[in-house]
Image 1 (tube, rainbow, N blue to C red):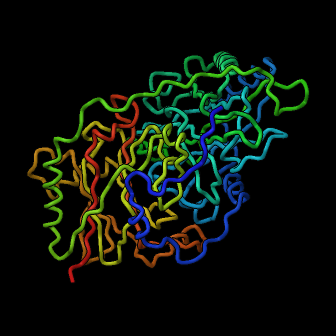
Image 2 (spheres, rainbow, N blue to C red):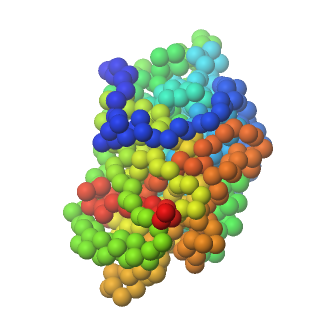
Image 3 (cartoon, rainbow, N blue to C red):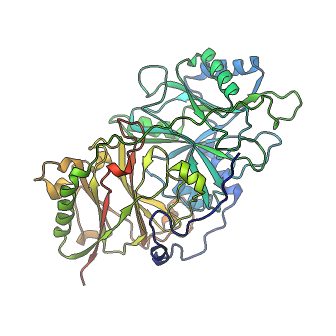
Length: 507
């Protein structure tokens, strides 16, 4: 196994060191010291209890029977929404790390194997014996624009940071998932995660016999890139599910799905005859690194640039009582495989690699100040309207270190908002312009304006804690998930980058 020495870049992805040093201070007070136990408690709380019965109960019972017949043992895991804003305020994570508030993460919690080296972030992250598998059986979400199962490797402590957090191959999304039936929604399915070819073949056979033939999805942890095992030096993994933007009429169904995920998860392994559950029973049978989907079709949004520049000018002209300045939106993250090899870590306010899924492009701004009486206008192409993405959004975050989500708008909500400024242009429906305001009654108004909380707001009070958040320091992230033609992220070179204008009152 090749190892990559941990190193930090002094400035990542074009963010100059001088700019980083000039960023406003993130915290005015010392936050509570997070602990390993706080994370475990948060995942074992009421929203982390084992998932209830679903109409896949028959397949689950058959699968358990197949495991016993095949000489396998199993342990049950949990499925629960992991709200990073809340977990930050509770002290369970060192940073919220720019979460997507419109796509809360459903995280798989796994128990430890008796005798293994303790996991760093139990039960969210887990080690895997080289002949073990993680098996998830359940129902896919209701109709929505995007969902995915994203297998990641996470190295480091969630409570203290920093983290190396990278995708392990391509996520399985609503356009690639195999289910029972012709639709990806509300259908039974199974998911198998392993790095061992023999284990994968045997578990697939057991799922076929359980009634899930042609509905089983395989995700590989390739031993060529990751160290499987249950010892202290083995890599640790995390399985997260994202769900975003229910189809009209299915909003409550999606809320119910998140509240009680109809998913059952198990770690399974061939039973040891020695009583030592940490020692593999099967010899190594390494699965190869899976082929990756290729992003980009060659088509771009770049012909819309003149209209984008006109939109910028008209936004400025519409607010003559304010000074306007641009905040640069640039590439925010490295791709996962290069990021793994370079050990690029997440450590806000520096932009890192680990939060980027292989299914998304996430351009980001530097940290900037937004005092009371001011507002920002996010504008750009609606990447879903241009068919560069299935789901896109614009989100604002507070505090350089905490990186908690304040407000977000998705491609459906953004549709038509550019008409406020360029209704006379033929491509107005492919662009957007949305205002996030702290200017109160004296500032912009209308259906495409979101009021932001003032800088004096105690952000964590909504979660019953007093961990400080610097509400005056903001950051903007634009998201583009899953190009319809390639079933993976759009090529960044094909996008017109989203833009940001900051307006402050003229003196």
